[in-house]
Length: 103
Image (tube, rainbow, N blue to C red; front, side, top):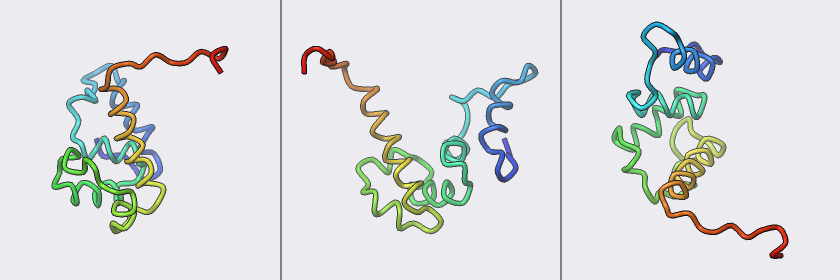
């Protein structure tokens, strides 16, 4: 999956949904998925390089440390931190949500 600059998300969508030999997102390398998420190969490569090729190595990293990596910046760092927060929420047991009338 080698997307053209500016068409990363569209290229990934087409790869995942094509009729002949579709790419399975769960079988895609972390670097490629991070490139789709960030829509920028340079920042994805920098983050994955810092992680040693495995995002689990970034568990607990500070947002400022991510933002300081070459080519990353504040927006990409915030996306990665948001990704980790979403994963943490998805993997933890559901908590009852207060209803609107509870407040």
